[in-house]
Image (cartoon, rainbow, N blue to C red; front, side, top):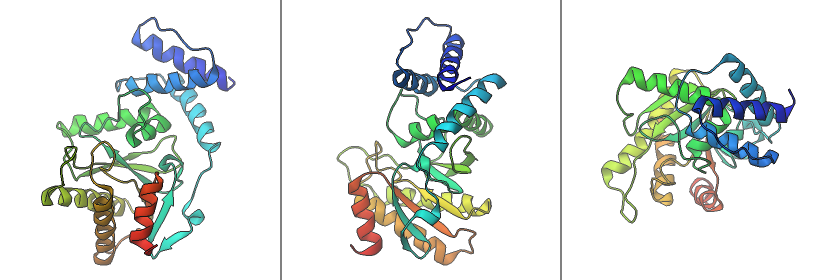
Length: 260
């Protein structure tokens, strides 16, 4: 199959799975967005090995065509700490951190631009399936401040570490307890990374998106928590990357890390 034939196969499979009559776009870019939307709304269910093979070939080719970044490519460094601006799903590191919700199944909103959606969309349907297996065994929602590790599938990283940050009501100031919960997110991810012997981890800006945690305060908590952990623990970690996406977050972290 060529790229478009793979795309058509994946779309047809997911539509047949839903047993619905749905109009399919004809333009390649629109069909690609349509596939992502179908993947976003798909519940974790069994899927054929043929689908997995075609999906993995398709998504892996997309990943390899992206401008991937390794730790060796990152120039802004302070000891073990690094700052990098860009799409976390293009980082070729041991683990990237996903800011998840308490169901831990990814974002079901079609084409939503949250990091949860971006990561699941690039990884493939197996990521939601693995998260679902974890949650079935746990048999309750994930606690705020905890973390779980999964495979990364078609992402360039080896693993994804999922953590649930505190959600702050819009216009409210985080309480001391909520600040501690955010710090626990970073600690839990670092502990999971160490338990698995990982050497590199990339943190997104946990809780600062739709969860409304103030960016300045969140960055202070993130940096202080990571620095304290690295000082007080024997760790396998050689690189801890603070990944930012917006220019505003980049300025905040650069000032906090390098005083610029």
